[in-house]
Length: 361
Image 1 (cartoon, rainbow, N blue to C red):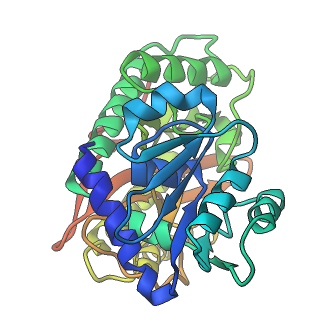
Image 2 (cartoon, rainbow, N blue to C red):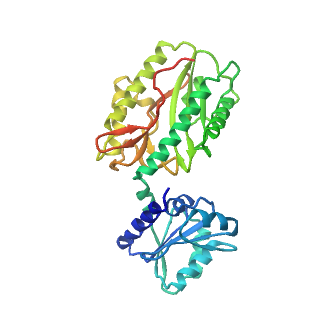
Image 3 (cartoon, helix red, strand yellow):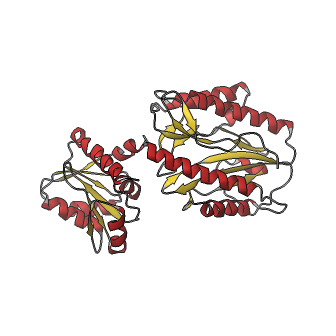
């Protein structure tokens, strides 16, 4: 990512200080520090002020890394960061200090308060940065696309390696290995591989369960590459698909396509969810759809917006979301089909290149 983009992001956040009457903002969540400064270390705090150079506080472990990754002024601190941040703000005689109230511990809050000057206050900034992160730049969408291509490539290679005796845990490990081999830093989340009746568990953990014939096989996976997450789910059949499995798969696919067709700039996220549920209701399966239709993703695997039935957030061009309806029947199994899509003015671009044809292995 070019430094110019980080600079523009910091300026945009500072421009919003007027609405909150902040003199400065303390950014402490590592993912938000990365978004605004490019620093990828796990321990840092960023202080933003309008019309002043941003200051990044970190510890000696990251001194060299910080100098290489960010154009912000770097302060290396021995010991806890927050007292040093507080003293910096006191020297600047700043009184209205925004902080990430949903991202900070009680102990860090107390350390911040300790050295603030008389009359200064810490004021909740809420999801100020997360709201900005919902709209991805073209460069971010390209990074998500590359992450999605890596995950898709690993998926296609992994399913070709399924053999008698392969276990859920073994297949999940193979997928994770292939994603790293093809360029990912790590999986975006714990890879889900669930077979047979266990596929009815939407967030099943892979176990030492051997994949059997004439069963559903659900794989939910994603890569984290250059910091950006991808997410996809495909449901396969081991053996010859039964008529019931075919009907159920067709219903979920039609629901997913209906939801994708509803995605465009200006549409409420709840309407996308309702489009999927209406289609499943026609097949009598809406009660078996037990989660929301999707979520945003980017530097985190779960970001705003959420695509749930009561959500009112409007989709905007540049958002990247998942579309993932599913149906889960205890004792039989579950089917989920998920793509990552980028919202456009006229609709959306599907970033997941893997076929959604009901594949038998």
